[in-house]
Image: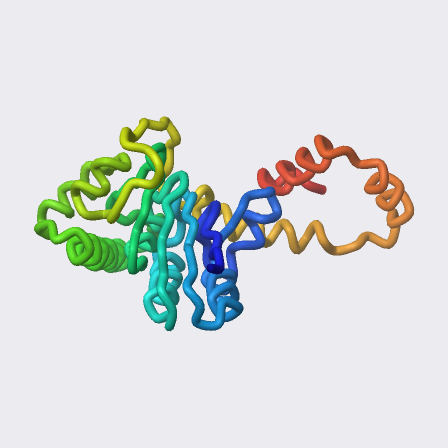
Length: 240
């Protein structure tokens, strides 16, 4: 049985490089599709431990798993929050570790522009919430309005409750779930931050012929700590 890892931030293919640049684990539609293609129709286990991220990337991954020709088992081994909880609903069977958690909430975005732009974004968020609530309701058999209330309250669901409410089919290994204190609320970086970092990454990647020799010497001796400081400098726009 092939394991399809869905670990770390759920990201679009275009934005994944920003998270990887700062050392975050990332799951993208392409990485999941590649794993499914390699499995060639054999049964797969999608292992999820993710704080969530991009809802539309999550939707694409969910769709890829649902379209897969073989059997799909979803194992929630740590956290399935936000967009990752959407992906979890794709399993023919959904299992959850006794120490794992799910978290569901309403969609969020960063908006700017005139009143028409804001109204459009509001309508888009409402439409996204309705689609996600309907997906949860289809899996659980719960009333859509009850699901919507859980999303509005940003609800954390432990293993026992996940099975009781129908989000999962069985608890793995243990009988008693434990609580964890991880905080998750979708993407780690906003779209604005991602755009800024991409621009600064491109700028930083351009070689400066006037001090190429000096840079080569510095890079060869650069420690992990100084490398991270350099990346943070790029993030905050202090890289020269």
